[in-house]
Amino acid sequence: GQNIDQPTEMTATEGAIVQINCTYQTSGFNGLFWYQQHAGEAPTFLSYNVLDGLEEKGRFSSFLSRSKGYSYLLLKELQMKDSASYLCAVRKTGGSYIPTFGRGTSLIVHP
Amino acid sequence: GAVVSQHPSRVICKSGTSVKIECRSLDFQATTMFWYRQFPKQSLMLMATSNEGSKATYEQGVEKDKFLINHASLTLSTLTVTSAHPEDSSFYICSATSGIGELFFGEGSRLTVL
Image (cartoon, rainbow over all chains, first blue to last red; front, side, top):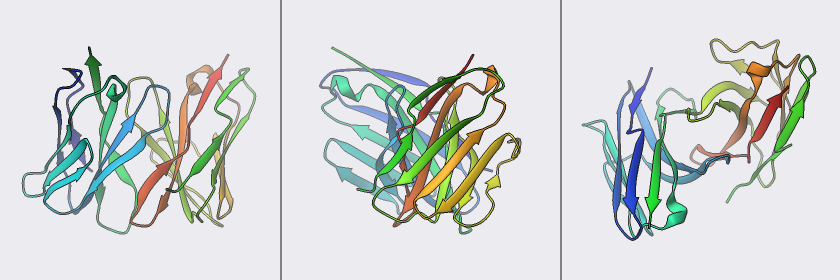
């Protein structure tokens, strides 16, 4: 199986930068996803990393190190609407498109 | 981007009744759809993988006779919770793959069984 670990909860201030870490253990890595989920809503896609390095997309960036089994999601210029749960999901090789989700990190942004 | 529509968004039913939830891919053909369940403050738990024209593949611990999944066309999959009980109350979410295997999620359906 896959073990995916991410902090349960984080708090940050509006306008600041926050980094949400995700570590994983899997046999046959085939991509890591980050999703944002507001309370009572379905997750929305944020990023996908399959090679090492940093992928930047506006205020959000995602980093991957396959050798370390480590990823982070970086959120800049935090806004109140960024308060949500952030889910790290890992996909294995073997033909399945199904990623396994971590428990998610609940981010609270305060003024 | 790809759109997946799920209906109904909220449903309340009496214990012992059955509830059907629909999941539609609106602008792409989804040969495979997935059904998840999420309890409050918990992660998404995969229930089953639904393949068009064949039987669904259920995850360990998920009762296939209780959670009936039908994938009759390339754009529609349904989940029927049969003989629902209060412990079945949860947030049910469908998703479908597109392109690189990125998952697009439906809006989710919140089921409350009284």
